[in-house]
Image (cartoon, rainbow, N blue to C red; front, side):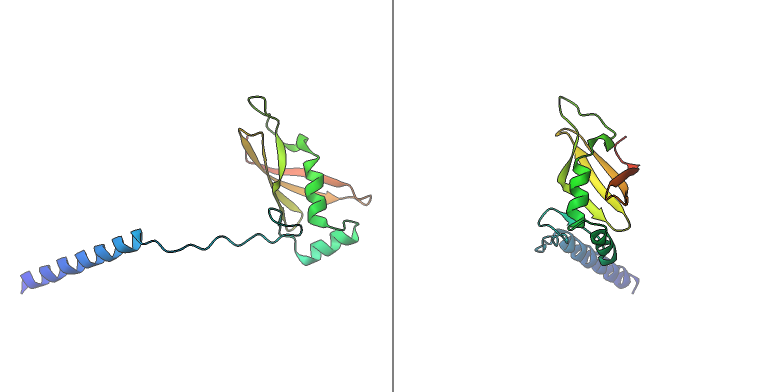
Length: 139
């Protein structure tokens, strides 16, 4: 009787290992990631909620996410790293995520290295955007 129990345990173990191995190597078709929500087209990541978007529009920005993105592109001085091998550090339009609650995630690069930044912005009464680095993932 004891040998029967050991044999059944061995068979069950082999079956379980075969099934787990099959699941590990089985290839299923993977769906492409969903496109980011966007105010201005592909590659423009916009996660502003409707309240914030309305507030920015009332503040004078017809296209809030595009306005924030365009303003950040004009501020390479916020990037805490210098370019290497003759490169110039800059934000790239397709690498700026407009987040809720007055924040932006941006990646800057010079073609050789890249730096990730979490920035916070505030808007003045005269429609100027002030940027503040919250997190510097590059230094």
